[in-house]
Amino acid sequence: MSVNDEREDLIRRITDAQRGLGRLFAQHQSPLFTCNLTMRQLKVVTILSVSGSASGQDLAHGLGVGLGTVTGIVDRLVVQDLVTRHEDPHDRRVRRVELTPAGAALIEEINTAGLAHYRRIMDHLDTETLRALDHVTQTIRAVADKIVND
Image (cartoon, rainbow, N blue to C red):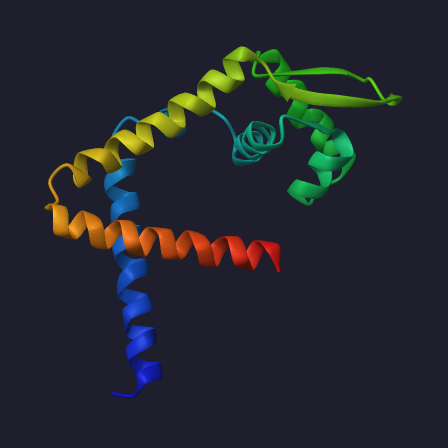
């Protein structure tokens, strides 16, 4: 087996294992699956959780849709009390969207539930395996940061 074949096999095995973990996590009643948001609505809430606030144009660009589509998505999120709109203090022509406390709580609940499942698995690993996982995780994070910053 060549080095490239071995690398491809390892990558496939790792991604298969990650998919399997995702399927296991999906079997639990995660708020991610019970929140009744469409994928685009969830993307908007997630974008806002990272950025703090965004204009309609920012959201349209992030979602790869038109401003009219974003308006409808945001309207429905406003009705659910997950986001709010307000005037941009630097440009009164721009309306900014940000999470309400309920929207921030939903994102926190989704993140906490996922981490709790992952934590339950790690609680069953021995210290040597945790050290190896820590090393690998830190390496993956460093490479991801480098890719994003390049």
